[in-house]
Length: 344
Image 1 (cartoon, rainbow, N blue to C red):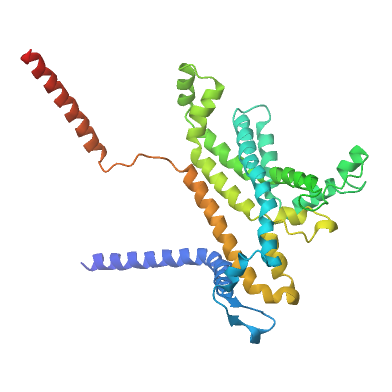
Image 2: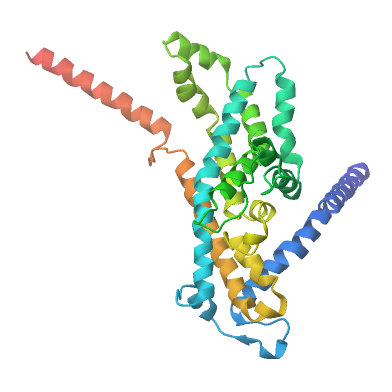
């Protein structure tokens, strides 16, 4: 009896040590999450209901939903600037997000065939994703510099201003450069996910499709894509959320002529929050704008998940009940047929 009690106490001490060790291991993440995520989000939510000025605390006052009402007042220049920042971002996302799904998937498909030197190509495709957005900006900024010092202009013997122009007025080349840079920089992670998913597709399914007369295209449509749908959903969700928060590429790839042009909601929020005393009185409005932008991002994420979810026919019966009903229907039909034959 005493041995059983001692073993139970020892087991409790062991479990307590495991919990403490687990808490110690995750505590750095929890502390960072608390300080840099949870507390700022809560403070921003509170400030969104205030006329808040961090440089003049005596002027702070509660205004309720007035900041949110002002966001939808398009007569205000700051509200107009906030909603205009969505236009170019949405257009860029409409092109960049599909490219960042299709291109890595195609690359993973061909690399999965194990061509000569596929390990080298696999490493080269993933390598850019380990770089920071700042390093990516330096590389492509030097390549597409607007004078003869740029690598592309040097090759072409031109002086094309690749990274200049205002939205909808001569900035097409800049967005083209950002698209190329984003594909080069952001394809690596999706490529790794797709590569792993393609390896898990059973080869017997390809063989069965081929025996039924299906070619390569039928195998891709009827075998490959349905079996990696979950990986496509993950990559699409992560890429969509990341590029709705477009900021780094726009800031890193520009020149002095458009350094302060707000072409994404994140740039709008950052511009006014870092404006020190000049825009300090707009802090409450900017916090409300950030909340609205977060809600819009969640709506897009929910729509994407809903569109990619599996469609299953809802029924109030279990599979056993459904099987019983089918068997009973067949039995009744057979019995009715037998009676008719006897009656005739």
